[in-house]
Length: 269
Image (cartoon, rainbow, N blue to C red; front, side, top):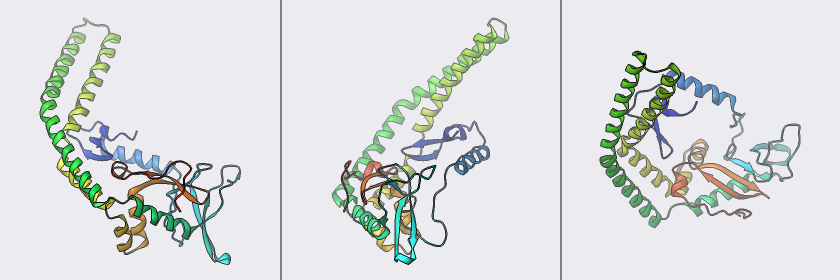
């Protein structure tokens, strides 16, 4: 239901790009399906007037639940805590002061940020990938085009044989399904080869710049929302246990650019 290929797009290195193949499902129908699925998920975000930088990104290392945040004016403090499980069962993970975790994430950004040397290596690797992509397209596209043309010819022959009543209906349907799958697979390969890598290259270069300037982006942001947007672009999950960061997951393409310095059971202090 969520595969973009059927709406005329392809997914390449975490990015969805227009494909060279015709859409099977109308875009408006595909978009409505995605909206329904999003509404059925548990939406977690900033609620009310209180802003918390990390709400929606934090997960408990003990129970796996998402952490929420709440303000305690009478205690003059705000905390991140586990969302209670169904049935009201609470986790033993202690409440973590918001300032403490926000500071840990700031330290984490400084630790994982790309150095100039690693940035140069990443740009060089990206340029090598672009050259490999160009060579692969030149080498593979003619063969795939010829294969598709043969599959279409075979499919036409199959249809003629069926119309001439030389083939049982059940056999025809089975062979037709197999041929449709083969053509669809070739179309997907061709669409991947024909992705405009110039645009992809520019987007990945922008991601490299972001990965090399994380602390600057956070420091120069003009609002809390901008800082949170930077974190959401980089991180998929930040796992907390014993009031410390014990695991992180990056969003693509940052999962290819940034190292994961946190090992199971360790803490960022």
